[in-house]
Image (cartoon, rainbow, N blue to C red; front, side):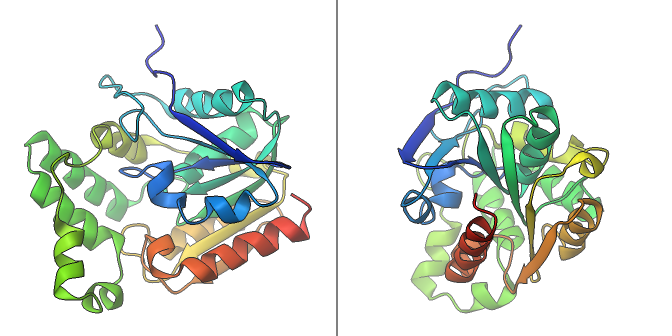
Length: 260
């Protein structure tokens, strides 16, 4: 029985395909909202929200990395985008890597930001706390924990009182419904054996001030993917909030250099 519902998917732009894979507790709009119109100037950009994010219904029984990857790839193919570069952030890097080995005929390139091949103890501890807080209904505690995980000390200390309060406000809707299942997948996913099989052009972007996914995880990805380029941005985990222009420039340059 299929455990993943149809994914809410948006398609914009024209040109070579780009498939977006977002992080746990995020959505396509959250992680890529400012990047999509830039990419869409020369690409067909497809973004699908995972179960329990955006407009996609929750899959409360959970799902595997293979199931999620197949659903994300199928959403692109169903939208008429047969081949694509996958841009993955955080948990989305595991989706991107698995897509490259499970659907090699479709993946032309990879961009992996703030990613990991397997959760280390720090990641496991943090995502486990997310699950613990949300299973207890503590949405305020989760918002605080996600802020601690998501941003560098310098970024947090540079916020105004109003900005800081807004960051910690879970809002009336609370966090995305699927965070528990997404966090559980982040803790269990393991793509270490996939890495040696990847042959497409790959950019790995590490975030040097990241307290959720230490930059050593990005270095591991780059070291184990043949020919991968490794770059770093001095930012916390949510690089698109802290250093959006620098991150965007790295991606645009990589895509142009490889004709993706």
